[in-house]
Length: 313
Image (tube, rainbow, N blue to C red):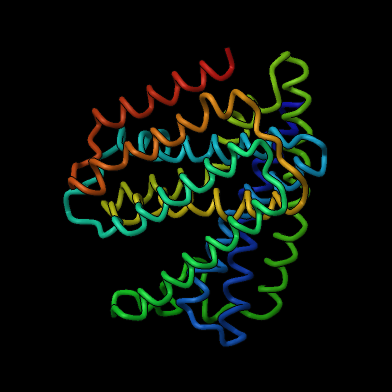
C-alpha cells in the first residue's frame, strides 16, 4: 500500500505540475507580463513545484530529513542520472559550443553558499532569506543579460506551455488541477515514503536522498531525454544547471521559512560533498566542450548506483 501511495503521488505530481505550468504561463501572458519574465520566473517555479510541495509537506509532517534529502539527492541525480541515462541513448554533442559557463558559475556559487549555511547546523528563516535573496539577484541578472542580446528575447510561442489560443476556461481548469493535484500528490508521496522508511528500518533522510529524489527528478529526466534525441545539448545542460540552482536557492529557501531544517552529521560529512563533486563533473562539458558520450553515460549512471547503494546500506 505504501508503494502504491508513492507511485500515485509521483504520477499526480508530474501531471499536476505540468498542468500548473500551462495554466500559470498562459494566465501570465494574458495579463500582459513579458514573455521573458514569464520564462525566467513562472516556468522556473512551476517546473520545480513538485520538489517544492514535497519539501514543504515533509517539514509540515515533521520529516525535515526528507525535505533536505529531496533537494540534495535531486541535485546529485540531475547530474549523474539526468545526463547519464540520455547519454546511453545518444551522444550529447556539447562540443557544439553551449554558452552555459555563466550559469554554471552561478550554480557553483549557489552550491557553496548552501553548503556554508548547512554547516551552521540548522537551516532556519535567516538561511531561507539569504537563499531567496541570492535567487532574486540571479533572476535579475539573467533578465538584464537576456535583454542585452537578441538571443535572450523570447516570443510567447517559445515559452514552455504557452498557447496563445488557449481559452479562459481551459486556463482555469489547468490552474485548478495543478493547485489541487500538487498538494495531494506531495502528501501521498511523503506519507508513503515515511512509512517505507520505517518499515525497512532506514532513515527518512536516506529515502529522501534516493526514492523521493529520483521521483521528483523524473520531469527533468524526460526533458533531457527529448533534448538528447533532438541533439539539443544546450537545452540538456541548461536544464540540469538551472534545476540544481533553483533547488538550492528557491526550494530550500522557501522550505526554511516554513520550519527549521536540521542538517545531520551524515549530510555534512558525505552527502554535501558528493553533491559538490557531482556538480564539478560538469566542468569537462561546460568548459572543455567534451561530448557526453555513451562511455560518460555508463560512468555517470554507475556512480549514481554506487551512491544510492552507499546511502541505503
